[in-house]
Amino acid sequence: MAFLVILWIILFGTGLLAYLIFPLFGRAAILPEVDATEARMQTLSLEREQSYSALADLDEDYETGKLSEKDYKELRTELLQETVNIVSQLETAAKTDVEAEIERFKQQKRK
Image (cartoon, rainbow, N blue to C red):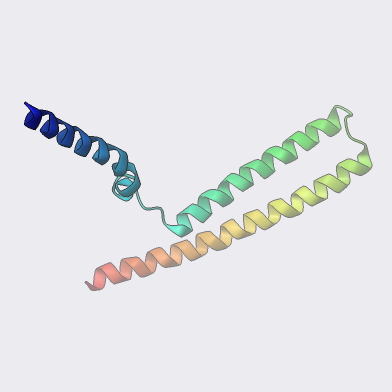
């Protein structure tokens, strides 16, 4: 009888240990590997959308009279500059991404 209890504890303990450890080591197999370039593109796209939203909110605040013309022009100039930087980074990353895809295609074709 004691043997069955010990066997049950060992089996249960092993199962519990596997359940607790699996998320730590099994994550790489579950989650797809994200390319650094793709992650950067997603981040830049999100920043672009946030920048567009901020510009729209700024225009709305000015139109409703919440901002003075001076403040509006200053903030809009800053936001537009940030937006231009983000969009140019996106374009540069897109060109680089296309060139990388072409290189990968060439490598696959050679094999």
